Length: 430
Ligand code: IMP
Ligand code: MG
Image (cartoon, rainbow, N blue to C red; front, side, top):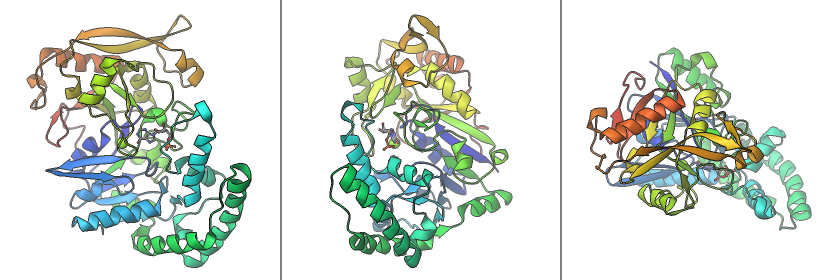
């Protein structure tokens, strides 16, 4: 029996879904605790490709209850569409549970997200435009609408009418855009509420009781630690707690109930949207990584920025997450390069820096210092043990573990579930 957190150690898209999917084979619950439909998950099972943004990936595993907890911001229109897609493919959705406390992403959140970005000129964050930031802003301002209010028609009507007056003033007077129609929003959204109500419960109690009864729970962190609102590269960050601590904040489960934290890092680095990225490759090597790794966003389809592995960044996120071990994914993407580089430290204003600076201005000045390692040309996607890997690939992985100062428990060598090398099975034991 175990409660395990899986968390991204870079700027998101670390192939966490693959690690969650591995653990979910023995899990009773898979929990989404932060973010919203700015996250995108692709799961490949046989010839079927599933893309999810709101429904937790765990829904594809038989016997798993997929839970959306308090820390999430929830777009009912997206959920209802995903629910329909699931049912059309014959996947039962009755094992989904959603917290009474999630904040609802309303149409004005999406509108303001885009209006705000468009007003920023060259200071754009490059958000996904899904209304995530504005929904969290309302939550913190204590003006948001929570699920418990949303699924109660009288409470929802009242809250909607309060919110829309304020929001329409903002939309028309500050942004000079058209106001929203209260009646139309009510009609559309109360239909969603009726469909969602049967899934809603007190998820904190549900998980506490499950844990007391020795259930296996996987907490699936969305995005990546470097996008965390506090510990990430603010303001080029998302608006939620992406680090492992977010699992407690976002679920109402106490820290002493977490047994292990598995950090997930790519064998290189990617970032979508704007913001500092010291090891970025704006050249043909970066393009080659993008093509070999199919590095295009699941949510927005944007090409991801690509670069070398940054051990300064990942050592930092190993620390803030308190990782027990690391899963290094997409190692196969690096096949065929003569030389690989790993960033060991930065130079900032000529000074050697080994601790990741979270102040953007400082990080923007960071010049990466690299160590070069010989690459490998053998296809590694059929390797199933560490010994199956070519010497140079083993060398590369060992050097990452050394620099990041954390043990590696798993390697990803391909997209499929079985294309993994398990180095420490106990770490991944539920
Ligand atoms: P927002 O989360 O839509 O507000 O976007 C804020 C920043 O986080 C933008 O740079 C996005 O590209 C980035 N972001 C949000 N979610 C993800 C994710 O799941 N993977 C990678 N980047 C993300
Ligand atoms: Mg993603």
